Image (cartoon, rainbow, N blue to C red; front, side):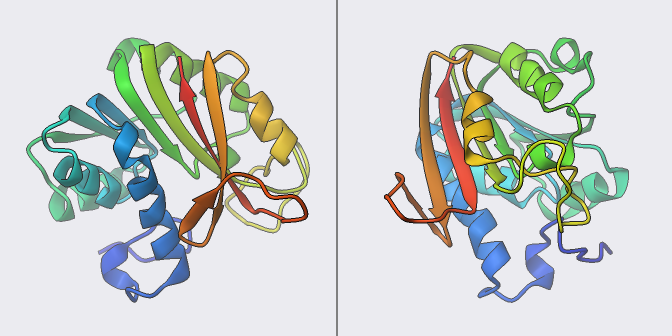
Length: 203
């Protein structure tokens, strides 16, 4: 049985009112209208999101690939969140060979992942390569002091500033940036401080 570390969300071990759980689930619901075809959930964790997507978009989705770098977490996902349209796979988000291994997708989801990797440009290059022309990427990340700067979160390499976050998506043809506050998502309002950014990008 997995233990909750504060990073990998395990819904069955958390109260339904847990704020972090609600925020994570809200991101999948936010992304739902954009999800179709062949779907990649990179750093899928325990698999609850893949399972949600498979159920919510059963008519629009043909296949979901959930990738994570932890064998034990994937075993848990296969046991607790098995679905006929979902395949869980072991993989490294910054592996240069990942695009060749996985192929291309109509939709890519990347929630709370990029702050865990040192080479965020390599990560973004992988996502871009794996997205079909016209495909949509939905990516979220917490904000912080900036690339290369220390963070108070023990599992985070760094946390980008809002401007650095926007710069990640310059190669995409169309980008919408939203900000998450609890379970709600909004466009920026003057004088409001935001802690999590969500980008919806079309290739």
